[in-house]
Image: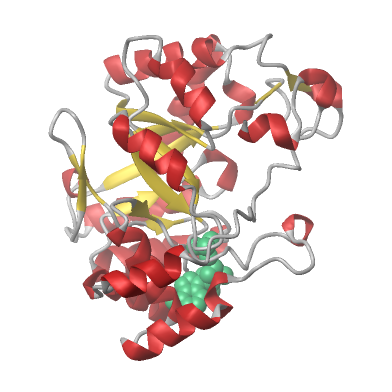
Length: 316
Ligand code: A2P
C-alpha cells in the first residue's frame, strides 16, 4: 500500500474510499465492507450529509475488533457556511459527533467560498459572504487552532488554486498539508500538483472515475467520461483490468492520493485491487496525452459576481 507521509512522520494510505454521493441508506454497509477488504483511509465531508451513517459503520468495525481507531485515517471537510472563526470549532464538533470519533486525521476547508451561517446552499447573492467579509486567512487561523487542540491531526484545503495556496503559505505558519482537487485524465492539473509538491503539500484526487453518479444539475452535454476513454480501455485490456482500475493506478503512480467512491461490494474490491497494478512509462505517457483541461465540477453552482464569486475567479 502506498502511503503519503506528513512532515511530522504520520502516514496516510494514498488509496482511500470516497463517500460523496454515497446514500445514507447504503453507506454504513459500504464502510463495513470496505474496511473488511482492507480500506483504511475514508474521505468524508459534512455536506455529504451522511457522516452519521459513516460513523455507524466506523463504530461497528471498531467495536467488532476489525480495526482500531489508530489503524484508520479519516478525512472530513469544513462546509462553506462555517468559515467565520467562531463557527469553525462547532463545525468540527458536529462532524466528530456524527462520525462518533474524538479526533479526525485530516480536516479540510472544502471550498474557497463562504456562505452565511444559516445557508447550506445559497439561492441568491445575499446568502454568500465575500472573501472580504470572511477572509481565507481568518478561516485558516481557526483551522490551525483545531490542530493545536488535537481535534484534527492534520489540516488542509480543497479546490484551492496556486494563488490561494500561496496566500496561506505566505502567512509563514502551518501551511496546508493537503489540497484535495478534481483529477482524472481529462483534468490533470500538473502545474498545480508541481506547486503542491514544491511546497510540501500533499494532493488528493477527487472524482478520479469521473463521478458519473453526480446530480443531473452538475451534468452538461458532451462531458468526457474517463471510464469510457478508448486509451484507458485499451490499457485496461493489456493488464486484464477494468478501466476504473487503470484510472486508480494512474493516480497512485503520480504520487497522489485517490479516493474512488463506491457502495457496491464488487467494485469496492475491484478498486482496492487496483493498488497492485503497475503501469509502464509508455502507458503513463499515453494517459498524460489525454489532458483536455476539462472540469466536471466547474464550480458554476457558486456564482455570485457581486460577492466576488465567478467560475473564473474560483480557479484563478
Ligand atoms: P457505485 O457506487 O455504484 O460503484 P467518482 O469516484 O469519480 O466520484 O466515481 C464514482 C462513480 O463511479 C459511482 O457511480 C460509482 O458507482 C462508480 N464506480 C465506482 N467504482 C467503479 C468501478 N470499478 N467500475 C465502474 N464504475 C465504478
